[in-house]
Every structure is written in C-alpha cells, then in structure tokens.
Image: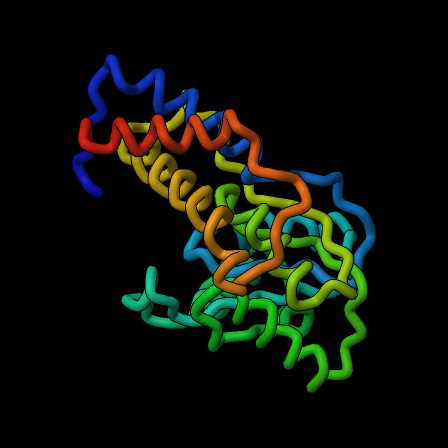
Length: 219
C-alpha cells in the first residue's frame, strides 16, 4: 500500500471509524501474574516488544511466541516466532525464557500448536497474558476460549497509538484490517472457526466497518 494518499475530506471519517472499531476489537486488561506471556504471530515487532516489557515487569516467567510463515507473511526469511524472539532477545529476554512455536499459519493453529508444545514440555498453563496486534486481539481471545477454555487469558495488545497520529498509509492499512475483522467475527462462528462472542458486535462497530468499506475506493 506504499504511496497511499487519503483525501482530506475522507480522513476524519476513517479516523473516527478506526477509533470506534479498535475500541471494540482491542480489549485490554491490566496485566497480572500469569503462567506465560503468549505472543501471537502478526509480523508486527511491537508484539514482541510488548511481550518483552511484560516479562521484565515480572508478570510471567516465560514467553511463548507462536507464528510460522502464514499466508500474509509467506515472504519472511524466518518464522514470525523466530523474528519475535530476536526482538525480545535484543530487549534483554534470555533465550531460555522463550518457547517458540514456528509452524502455525493462522490464529487457531497458534493456539493448537502452542498447546502441543505445552504438553511436550510438561508446561502447566492455566493463565496467560495474550499479546497480539490491536485489530486481532478480540478474535485471538475468542480463539483461545474456543480451543483452550481452560486457559484464562488477560488481553494485553500492543500499542498502536491514536488514529490521529498515523500517516495515510498506516490509517488505510488499519482501516482495512479492522473492517476485515468485523467480517470475520460475523462469519467465523458459523464456519466453526471460533465460538460466538457472548457480547454481540455493537451496532456502532458494524456501522464503522460499513463506513470504511464505503470509503475504500477513495484510496
């Protein structure tokens, strides 16, 4: 999306729509002592940075990074988990405090293949700080609830700041991600990919996603 320019008259509507959607898509909980910090692949370095900061905050003794070379990031030279581990190591996280799951290509596989590692390594995981990018946070939490309802997760998304701080390219990217997430949350339960959210999607979030879709041709 290099070189994206958003018309001045469209930008306020997109900023407002993104702010509304992230208010729903990115639930955030105060971190508390947990068994692991669980960083899910998204090819976004701030996920690894957030996980490292939580580790240094003493909230968990272990970071689990999960991510292979999914359809969005098939061009990566190494798995997302390995790239995340390099970032965390540069922030002072010891290698023996990180567990890497390097085969997953989607969120369900993040959870299922990580769970296989837990069993193989004899890790008892009852609580986790769940870290991913803001647009994916709610769906990630629901995916854990679907496949590992025994694990209690606190949502700790990475920080992307406010939409009014983003350049046009970032705003366009986040707008597309957010609108796509609403579509996934509406269709994935019927397809068996995740359990239905006990909280219905707010009407204002659906309207915001529709507004983004209406403005997409503008950029």
